[in-house]
Length: 283
Image (cartoon, rainbow, N blue to C red):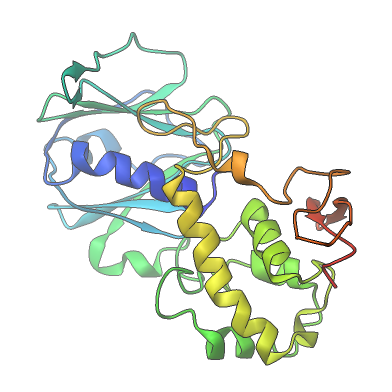
């Protein structure tokens, strides 16, 4: 599933095509994805102007001049693909419709934005803009990891008394919004903290070191366009490149990259997910 850097990369790609643009026509080609679409979604979107395009956790949100906000979740395989866009001297023509093109936005600038989702684990919903933060998909989310709301004091208090492994705690979207398996593995490796360490046992120094590492890893991943492992693509169809910078994720049995460590990367299963770490230097 795309994590925060991938979703933020998609949001940035959509912005020049959709922000301040009117949706001249919206096509909804099936009644549902993971859940049913809201009633009359095509009619409610057609003619609406996108006033703001932003992200909350792993959700893309489009504030419309109809006082509604479109909430988009990419799911496992969802893609938002742009065509008809002028890229320098090149024009990206509209491709032929594909089987899994479930929602299509025809914009007033002649671009087309297509939501393609082969596995149909994605989701879309409409909510009143004034109340969107209380929507069931957003209401329980923790602070954004790139915002000022995530600091040493907040994280230390949030982890205090938690008997769960730190890896599990950091994946809890109620604690921090948007962190996923790949980037938590990378963060804990850089911090030299074992994913099995109990959250409550981390010192103030260790927690204080986690906050800037979280920001650095996410910013580096966004700069690289995210990580493409299976289905993820940017809005122009390009791959992300951060997977070439993995220091620990998916590197089982390979040498640790910490200077002078000499250890070997191991993999363990935690809550149904693979955790990659170095048993020698992550304690």
